[in-house]
Image (cartoon, rainbow, N blue to C red; front, side, top):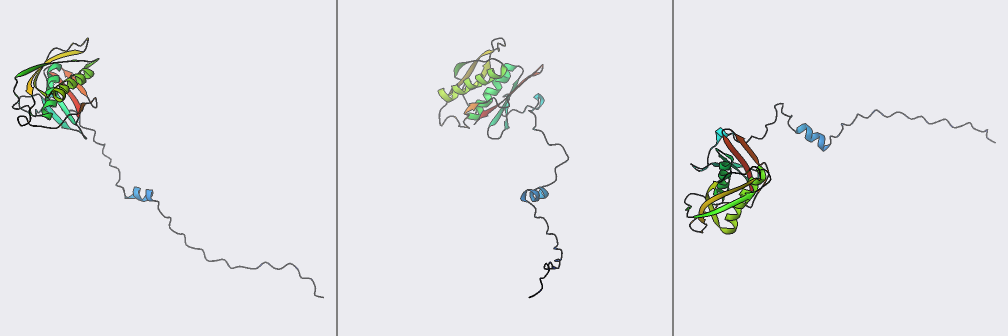
Length: 201
């Protein structure tokens, strides 16, 4: 009978050589951040402010309006020696964008009235009435005389002179769909007034 054997000795293993560390795979986000240009140390350019009164450049000689490009719409800038004159400039500028005012006969008159609760809402409603005269009644308000603005009741009345739009006689510009409050601004100083309004085209 064989003598009992003691516990078997634990097998001996040789250590495998240390595997070189694999380079960590960069995530897409990290790679994109590395490829992106370093942020500029110069301050970001702020949107250019509305043109100052001294930089008024009329689109039509003798008129008091200009345009500024906007993302998808157009900004109308009207000015004058008073807020009433600036309202008129903005209204004529809006109409001119829909049909050029040159050659429009001032053979008919139309009274335009509007009411608001402050200067901005009055400007909005006034331009809306001018737009309705053109879009609904085909009347071209080519020359607009705005009466005194009642700043206690925020009402205004104007007399617009022009004629009925006729294809073949009047050029067709870009349709204005609506007035907006976006970036609307009214600037009054001792030297006069400037109004800025973006219209939806």
